[in-house]
Image (tube, rainbow, N blue to C red; front, side, top):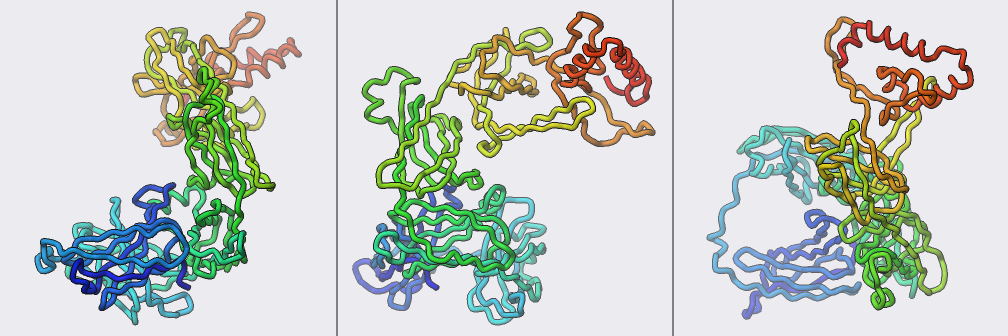
Length: 582
């Protein structure tokens, strides 16, 4: 199957009209949601004896095409958006430096002798060997076509100084091989013998226009990795991507088992995103998919002057947004704006009906809203989504051990549900004799920051009017975090119990490990009657259990819990391990 539309044409010398054979003709397009070094997609071919070329597999969007050949300057053309075949004529100008004067190619760092077969023993004639430097960000690929039996594949000369490199092999519809670590041998050959590749899962289907019932050619079809897998794909420059052919068919092979998001991008239609779960070696036929014309959605945000609206998958598994568009001032809001609270910005986009996550980012890049929305089936009218941002100004003071928390900076971030956030905090608590309870919080990033004065005071503007997570960064590099309520707090006490010491085994030998304190260590607790306070050595262990202990003591005043706690403290002080703690 040869997917996508096709560009045909000639590469000629300027003026003379002679064809240039062996010129490299490439067409590329950008994925704006990804970095430049990863988001550029490219298709290439070589011109024939008379300069003619045929370049299939192109997307239907706008493309940039180039032609280059030894001894000539590069010529560039634009292939405009569309699904029909395109004719391109390149005219190359001879460069001042002749091909004979071009610098020679450097010697390689050795070669690899290898033969690839499938799991059933079938020969693999076309494959790619990827070389990665060990311990440094360096990599290169070398393609092999029409291999018959063992072939020699060169290692790039830039790896000649490396003590070791990692090799991997890829082929269409097969899983990538495990890494093979070898030491480069400049001028020598490394014998790897026979390497078998396992067949991967396959996703295939066919696309049709909703209007006209014609096959949808030139649509970019990609399988995206969720969560951490997307980062690994970025680092390895590995993408599962193809373009639908003239019959609307697409096929993606060589896939590992797991969860993916199948994203369809077709000109004139909204982006479609669906979850696909693949088993090992499964053939997942998606059947016929009819491109939805979508529904126009208008997002109106009150309380912002500028920003960005992003539409993502419902559970935010994929960082790459389905839709990302700038928020612009509406004509209605622009006439009578009286301040930030009255400002209104909006964005309009097309989306396929379904459940999504809507995120609003302000002009400074701060995540301000993350909520689930449903785009409904319906007529061609616009579905309105209104978002109101209530902000506040916080004027307060930080205290530590009864004194102002002098200097440093303070930051505030809105607390979201974990699935709505890029940064997560886990709070754990445990009552005495009870099970441990944990709560996961998500914090938007980046937060709003302010400088803390010498008297511990600070002021921040434009923070969300809801529950916040506050972090105070001291000048010495330490930091403390607290939940900041929606109600005004004139003074926040950061005082807590500090525990330092050493971990020793029964013989008094230092050992490695982790120490955790579970509970609320913010303020010392005293008995409500004004009698003897809870001993300091018990505060860290009791934490939130102090309230439950006082409640039990009030119900049964004859019990002697205070003496029991005191004896416990004395027994701990007498133990050898306790004496090592300061």
